[in-house]
Amino acid sequence: MSSKFIVSNRVHDPPRDFTSVPACTYIDSSGQEFIDMETHQMDIDARDAAYRQEVHNRLVRQQSDPAQKAELKALLAEFNHFDNFGFDVDIYKRPWIIKKRIPNDFRPIRRSFTSCYDFKAIVVRKIERDKTTEWIYVSFRIPNKPSGAFWLEKGDFSPKTLLKKFMAAGGQIHYTEDSKRWADLLAAFIGAILDTEHPYLLPPVGWYQSADGRWIYTPQLKEALATPAVDTTRSNRLSLVLAGILGIIKTRIPDKFKGVHRFFAFGDDDAVVPTWITADDIPKHFNEMLDQHGPDVLLPISGDDPMLTATIGNYRSKTNFATLITRTKTEPRFPLCLIVSTNGITELQQKHCLFLPHEEVHAAALPLAEIFSKLCALVEHNPDAFERIVERSYTTALGSLDEECAFRNEIALLSVSSAVLCWALKLLKQPDSAQTTHEVCQAYINNCLSEWDSSLDCNAKEILHKALFSASEAGDIRFIRYEEVDSSYDPERDIVQKKDAFLLKGALLKSLLHEYAPGYSASDVISRLQSEHLLSEFSSAKKIRINSGPYVDARLLTLKRSCLTEYEDSD
Image 1 (cartoon, helix red, strand yellow):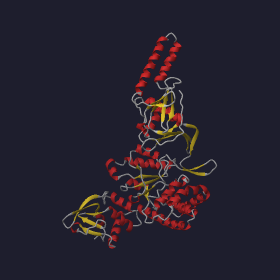
Image 2 (tube, helix red, strand yellow):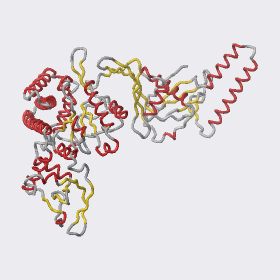
Image 3 (cartoon, one colour):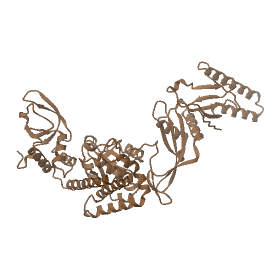
Image 4 (spheres, rainbow, N blue to C red):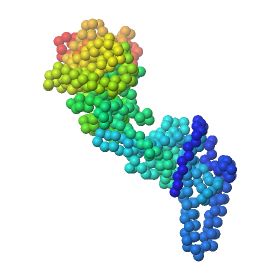
């Protein structure tokens, strides 16, 4: 069997409707395409029948010659099984099968087997920590749809596996009656275009040390699924900036992450990063998504949903959190995970996460886009200075904290991120911004330590009482009885007392805790109140009656009255 691959020198935009391209054409004796959609199939069938009859007659006449008989049988088998074929690519970069009926056939048949076009196939050698593996990377374009691509380990290359991967990536095959035949044809075509002479060397994504000792940063392949380190067009929060820098340098200083056993997390107010993975997903699919997003710098994961947990239990989320912890500890190149709590903090999140506190100071004045685009180059060209900055800031932060502090390593990493950010600003010739950033970052890191320490011994009832009392004294909120609600009722500031409960908006509760309990995490206080069954887990629709007349609809949380009435100033 022989294969031939011919690439056209002409490049044209493919037609939007591929049905306008005939599925089968002839090439006449002068080399021109001959297309007759109404009669060409009849002509093919007639010529096939005539050829089969001729072969049959020759077999009958020459039965006395076993050698010729075997030869004719082989020729007939070749004719019937499409073995004598090659490949061509038309001006639209779409592959065609070139079928010859007999050797030196001057009227071969061209048949299209897929509407996909612009195929590329390369051998990729992935350099991993302790081994090198060879993969086949295939990309192609699909009419009126996003491009498709798939990876296939070279040792697993087979027609069946290739066809399965191709179809899973969105590929299209015209004929499905005989899947084995078309799997063989697709494998032969990919084998014909596969460039095995010039394999692409793919170092590990992130930082790796070359043979000569230099540290080099390798970004993701353009075709690979990748998440930007920090999307500066969506967020200018300092917390996300510090986390983004840690994600970039994680594989450069993996030894500094060995003592970290919890994940950084954001509350729903700070959920400014998109997520594609959820912690309460089916474990098998969760692992597949982790592998798919393995090249990412940051790996945002939606926290488990307490409503789903109440319905099906926490087996999924417990299993997935255990997977995250194991892979983070055992895989130095595993991306930095961020847990994004969008539906309330659960017990598992309290156990495995450290929530980065809400900050009023933003980093809008910083040239974030320039910093993140040039940070890797700055580290590559100044490796010694970078290592000195990291070591000094990490050691200083550890030395300033008590050895029994539960957050020593996490605080030290935030200090490293802050030092790298200021160092980059200085190299970009912005010393004033570097000084201001240093002060802002230090204040924020101190706030992190204060909130995390407070969360270890958090009396949620007392904290909430003090915050509500202070807000009431300042005139920021108003307590009113349900029977006394009038037209001045404003759910953005009023707390309604109805029987043995208080009704208030969740956003109001969070803002009050941010304002009047600055040393504590609002999300943590709310979570503890909910775990003690003092505060409802979800807002529900309530009807507030105005002056014993019409009702006002509002989504409110329910706070048990006993949460406040045990204090002397509860009135």
